[in-house]
Image (cartoon, rainbow, N blue to C red; front, side, top):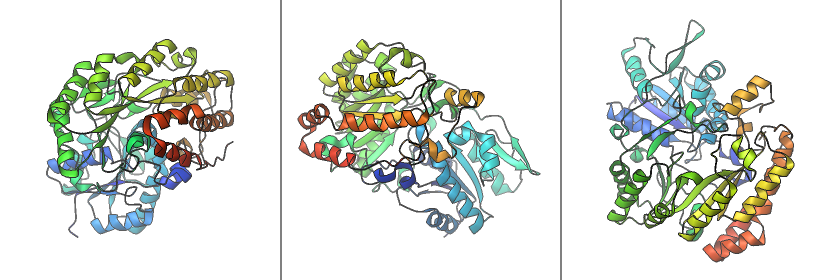
Length: 487
């Protein structure tokens, strides 16, 4: 095989991350950042390939064999996922690959890229067997690094790059952000195993056997908000949001429809429903082009209205995920999560459902002000809303979040391994609250999910909305037990 310039590697560690749920129940999502960086560097004249170890079900040794076969100038291990919580738990899988690669072919230069390395670049550089760490998006870091490696100049004064020199860790200032997102190419979809990706099970409750093909797309990068539990802006260096033009977004959707027959799509934006004219225009273009889509996206309780929801439904946006987070307004406000009250949540959820759009309610147990009573309030509120699906999370102090900074500053116990930040792993160790231990939070979270999902009220609604097949699917999901070390 001819030597290539850049090989982007997505680690696979699903069994460790999801336990018994790492079956057909879990989604397999395309590596957004890997695909985007591949396309960007290919556009700049470099030869590029991608290994998706998760999608191809490769263990670290199999992954390394493929890397060595490609013999790249630079192997970039992508420590990122399609949501902020999906980066840190990928670190053990990334480390396994890098360790095996250093043993198999130490001449191949390596770099770690993604949200976690950007949040903790110095620690990542000191602890992981990598030659470089990229802090930030990577567009203006990896391309000049490839140029340097090809020229053999060994001049690593490149923005966003961390490296070692004479045994010492050296850093450079962050690289600037891409200002015009329309200058970025579409993801390198042709380099990805598109037949392997599948949507989340709930995303396709109405067609549970039609979860493929599946793709993800962004219409913006960044987030202007600063929720204390979120780490998303560690990748970008500051709060803020940049938009693609609606025409550019829908052109990429058209590419996916034409070339891969994609119907199921996740809009990755941390907050899609924010700028009303942006959302409206995207929907108008999808409707004009007549695409038959099943899309889900994130929205906020305080940025949505009835007219917009009805337009989104016309465009095939069939699911909206809301960060409701807590049933206690005091607990919710304590993490800087908007100033909407519970009555507004009720109103918005009902409005969205009445428009024919399904709601995925996201709830977090173990926020700093949580007690047993307030966590019960959250569960009771979730039951009252009875959304078509509910994600129940335990609070994690993800690197890059304000909660992480506070925990480190106050000497709060954090997970011993990066796998402890995975929501569904055996090693999961949530953040304790001011009143509850990590174990108490985790026990409540696991009980709450089963109680909610197995209730006659919820299953009855699922049957009326999606049919008996979806009910049986939910029941099969509940049969899979989550094993915990810290309960």
